[in-house]
Image 1 (cartoon, rainbow, N blue to C red):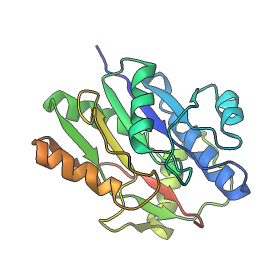
Image 2: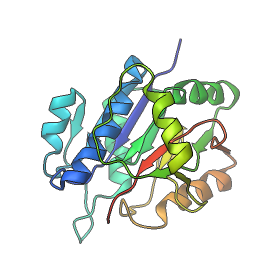
Image 3: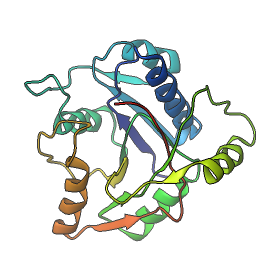
Image 4: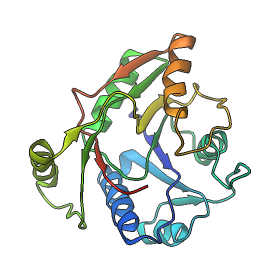
Length: 211
C-alpha cells in the first residue's frame, strides 16, 4: 500500500501582503501533490484559520509557546502526530514550494530505509505574484529559478521528511530561530539513522522575503 505523507508547518501571520502571497503560493504547491498528502497548518497566527478553511486543509491551534510567544518545535511536532497515522511526516517551512516528484523520492527512500531523515538545500528566488498552477507550471518555474535563482548554502535547512517512529521527542526549540534545523541532522546521525541529501534530485524553492 502506498504511504501517504503528512506535511505540516507553522506559518507566520498572514497580515503582511508579501508574506500572505508567498505562504499561499507554498500551500497551493503542496495541494498539487493531491491525495498523496495531508496538509496541517499549526498555530493561531492572524489569518491562519481563514486560510486553512479557504484551502480545505487541517488547522490545529493550541501550540505551546515560549516566554516570547514563539511557537515551540516540540509542540508543533506533537500536534502533527495526533491528526492521523500516516507513516511519513514532513515539516516544511511555510514559504517553500515543493515539486511533485517529492512523493516519488520520499517513497523510494522509505522503500530502502526504515529510519531516515530526508533533507536538502533550497533554491532562493524572489516571487512577487500569485503562481498559476496550470499545465507546465513545474517546468516554467524551474526554468525561471535556474536562470534567476540561487542555490542556498549548506546551513539553512527548510524541510525535513522522516518516518513517524523517529523524532518522537524534540527539544522545545523556538520555531524560525537558528539552530534547531541543524539539531535535526545531528540527532539523526547520532542515532544512526540515514541522513539523505536529496538536493540533486529535488528542486525545492524558497520564496525570499524580509525578516
